[in-house]
Length: 138
Image (cartoon, rainbow, N blue to C red):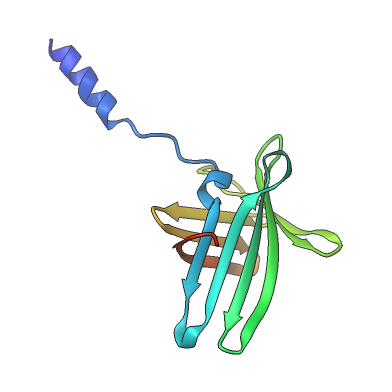
């Protein structure tokens, strides 16, 4: 009987596996700054399981810039790529609880509840692409 109780207790402590990167970022996000400035990021489904991300910056003077990204799974890992008019720009392997070299950089996608943080860590240090909270998709 004790063994059964211990087994049930152990099972109740089990955690669900973390969401895949595309599931963590899916949807719309916003970061509001001072003076009416804001940054939005929308991650919408793309081709073959990819998600496409558009980051838009707004200032009190209007639209301040746009960046585009694609998050896709390859045979061995998830990859975050910056996209440009001519195609793919820089790409980074998405860190997923593994250790290893940071050569070439790594993308860190942290989603906790209604918060999202995406950062790139490479030879130049850490660069935060986005940090904000969930927002409704209009």
